[in-house]
Image (cartoon, rainbow, N blue to C red; front, top):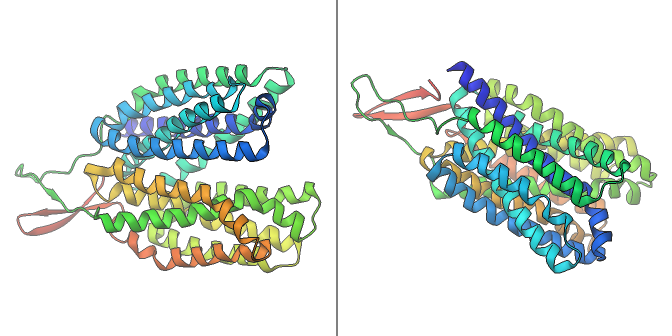
Length: 404
């Protein structure tokens, strides 16, 4: 059993890396594809919205199918389809074709995103301890792989279509090879010694899932804002050279990756609630330092604290959504992930809109408010993400460790 769980965990890591690589490969080719199609930055921005809508639609469908068919079926299929769809953005020569290609690729990328998170929840339940954050950390590894592949392909003079198609073909093989190591289904409730069927107390009330989704939207809005505005903040507000300003996002991204690698240990010792609450407080302090400090070095510290604080928040929310109700784990993850994804997409736009009213660094104080609200509402995790299930039998209550 232990060997099976270890193999399933490795396979889940592979799918997270695959998802990050597929998205990263598209992202690093955006300039070349924009030039090939002959569109403006404004037009490209509108097309990227279609990719986001496609991802949101795919997320909603993936959750329901994961509950109905099982992640062992849905996850490999989504990996194959996402990899196959990667070539599509490299083929069009007009905006309309590119719009359709981005919607399809976004749809299957969102499909893969939710199905791999749904399976990650099953793996975490079977382990009986937090492992979700490490999965999210490996998503970033995929982005690094994509950058290296793109750099090599550009040096060899390969077109975006060839690079995207080759990467997609490799992705299909990886998705199929990794499928046999996945868990067959979600962990089942444990029966008592007399064979009586236990009744699992469900924490998946719609109100609780809605709160998790709103918190995910706020946290991911903050993350999206950092992705697009951290470098501009250092350059335009603090006057840093472009080469130095780039390290603002680097500090944020590096701290977030490190935080996700250690968040599982912290969650296992102190609980998911503590990770979310104290992480959000740290993020609030970090973005406030970045917003008000006149010194570049202090801004770097602020962005790093912001990334470190946010790093463990989303994995805890996804894990809690999956644990809330075993029968609808996939659907719950899809709701939380989908709303969170919309928050990430809207983050850059919200901050951009606010710059019409206040300076960019002052607009960041909105992120402080969102992080404080997240910390205050962290109690929603109580009872659904502590690694146990409440089992009720014949009027008595017992705590059963997941995966036991």
